[in-house]
Amino acid sequence: MSVIVRIPLGLFILDLTVANETLAGIAKAAGKMMNLELASPHAGSGAGVNSVDLDVGNVDKVGVGVGNSMVFHGNGVTVEFRQDASGNTGVTVHGDRSEDELREIGQKLANSIVQQYAYHRLVTEMKERGMNIVEEEVEEDGTVHMRVRVYQG
Amino acid sequence: MKMHELDITIAVDGTVSVHVQGLKGPACEQYARFFGRIFSADAEVQRTSEFYMPPEEVETGLNLENLG
Image: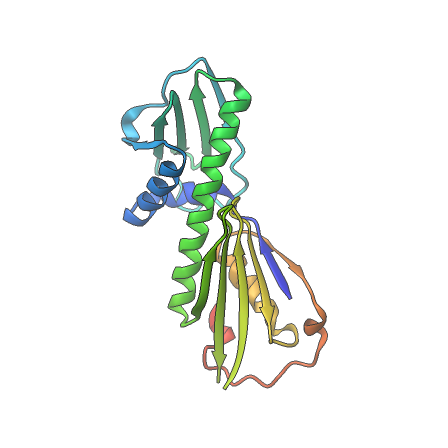
């Protein structure tokens, strides 16, 4: 049997409400891959000729009411992940580039964050249940493969 | 002691695909719930022939029931 789960970006943003070193590490690593620096949450939404909003998917609004944001800067582009006081999540990309370019930059960063977030959540949950990762490799395109062995009885 | 394996792929867009090997019967559907719960998302299930095979007696040590 195969199981396929598509992870909504909004889930990561909601987890910002429990901001901790792990989430910051995930974001920092993802930003580095895109040559974007993780900036102070108070850095503002940034300036730019254009801005685009990304779709973050549907998530249950757990932990609502705690406004929080994560901002990346670099190469004349600012990417802001935020959750407002009502619990609504969003991602906005600003910069002096075309809207298509901004959307592509934002989507690549978002994908990278979601992939690393997925990896962290999976490994944490499986280790807690004594499931053993016996093989792990990363392909050239960044796809991660893991083989997990589970003993019963 | 019985054993089964999970082949997990995390694509560059964050999509997680899990192939359950060596676990017969509908018990493997617990993995769909497990992974869906981790990510607060609906899990899409593709059943292979193993799903329709008679389930094995499972002395739950790990326990699949602990998957939540």
